[in-house]
Length: 127
Image 1: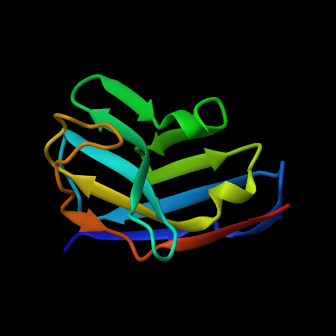
Image 2: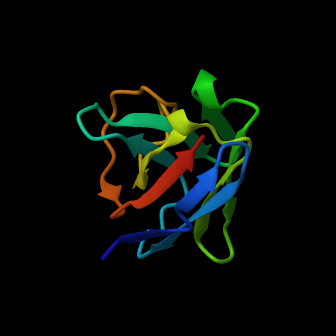
């Protein structure tokens, strides 16, 4: 059974940093796409950052977080991270990690669905 469990959310002031973690268990695919999404109540869920692993690795970000957020993995520990620096109030959202086997079209905004989702961790940035 695949499980994704996020942690690391919290409340910070604008300009601060947080690192989100997503512990992945039961997901043993060699090629995959993993992602961080966020959602604000009343708005559509938004893909923030993705990492595709297919022998090589490639990452992708939405424009609003480029240069501030970094997606990374600790493959030995099966953990997906999202390092968030220079946080802004508009980054406030519930953040989710997701995974799927299909590594194609692995970028924020892709219409390919994800098979597995975590329960989310709240990030609140105050001005």
